[in-house]
Length: 70
Image 1 (cartoon, rainbow, N blue to C red):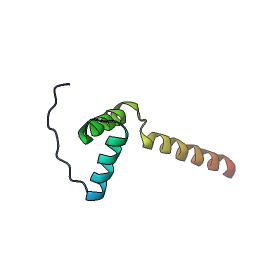
Image 2: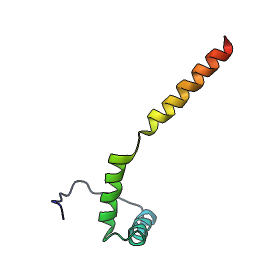
Image 3: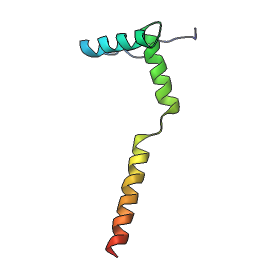
Image 4: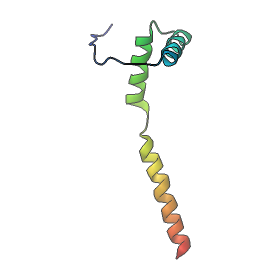
């Protein structure tokens, strides 16, 4: 396993902790920590920023409305 460092402690509600443990088991991870590391890795490498897409839609809508008003 890679060199691991304790980075942050997290406080979770009991319900969220139970959901996390269940998801880790269901998806075959060795532990909830392994699941969290994978989720963080996926979030940091594969997701597009939400705001970029939203901003593009807003700008397109404003442009369209401006053209309709001309």
